Amino acid sequence: NKPIRELTQGILEIANYNYEKRLDMSEHEEFREVADSFNSMAERLTEYRTSTLNDILSAKKFLEAIVNSIHEPIIGLNRGHEMLFINKEALTVLNLKREDVIRRSAEELSLKNDLLRRLVRELINPGEKKEPLKIYADNKESYFQASYITIMNTDADTDESHNLGDVILLKNITEFKELDTAKTTFISTISHELKTPIAVAYAANDALLNFNQAEDKTQRDKYLRICQEQLQRLSGLVEQILSMSMERRKTFRLHPEVLSVGDILEPLIEQHTLKSEKPVHISVDIEPEDLALTADRTHFSNIISNLIDNAIKYSPEEAEVNIRCRQINAAEQGELVEIAISDRGIGIAPEKQSHIFDKFYRVPTGNLHDVKGYGLGLFYVKTMVGKHGGSISVKSEPGKGSTFVVRLNKQADD
Ligand code: ADP
View 1 (tube, rainbow, N blue to C red):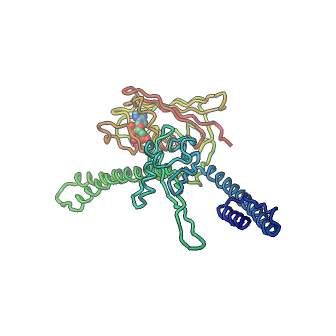
View 2: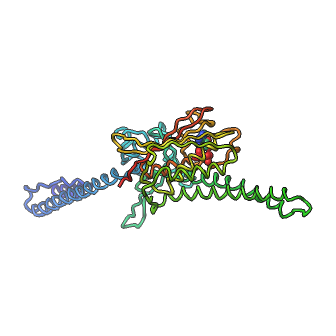
């Protein structure tokens, strides 16, 4: 019977998602009503499909916008590991082009891409230990930590869940890695610096405890002096560490006041000349004589004191130091006070000059430990000059001497 067959055929088409199917029963009066109902059902189904499709499409657009606005690399793979989506950051990090990857198999792409290969391998073997990925781009090394999210869907009828695919997220951890390295270096340098004076003072103290009364006083005084020196060295180190951490505090503040350059220099020169074990000649030349500036008294003194200290320390036998202070009028910066501290010491090789202001940096020399220091003085000086809105530079020639030039605003910034 033809109309029945046609109806059955129509139902099958609908069951196969062909919602375009319509029945024409104009020749069979008795089936017309059935056909009308069938056709309006098909109509509804078509409408329903278009609207759900639209909903899905707009939800997809939202998701795409979110994925693309995330500044960490993100990749989406379907169950067969085909690339469903990949954002700009991931393309950059993996050095891929969008048109080459969408809908392509990640395994196939990874044949020519080491980083992708690693990600796919880790995705397939979740138990494997996951080291951060090292990526070299833009002339610098970056580190990324990958995390893998499996997308599951639970079937409403059977309650069974199945895998729809995976999302790979990469987190840029370069900054943490750098901080971690800096912290490790800092701790090991500090521990090393602390160990030596402690060991020396310990030994001297031990000798004093076992001291035989019969032995002479000079010997005993020698040990006491060693203890004293080592304690000084320790307190000097602690002092510099404190000043270093102090400037990083949020509450750090300068206390600017009007200072006479001559008044600040005079006691400093006296102290340095007195405490030095070698002959020291410090000449001062201030023009105008009453040169003044607005700066933080403590830090300004410390800046100058550190530079004088170095000028003496790095002059092997006899220290010839000249301090020249001038007022200069720089077109853009206004009135500046320039303080130049020169010595005729060992000097600094040109290629080392850019490093001497770094934390813990000391120019490597065979007999480095002849001159005591922690490589923090110039770091402190540069930081504090910076806090004052000023600048510091160095001119030096090995064997001839060095000149450190500090320039500070005559008036405080605000
Ligand atoms: P340190 O405690 O080692 O003196 P600084 O930060 O003050 O630390 O100086 C860093 C390094 O710069 C020194 O170890 C030294 O090698 C070099 N340096 C600093 N000032 C001078 C100078 N006036 N002459 C020669 N070298 C200097």
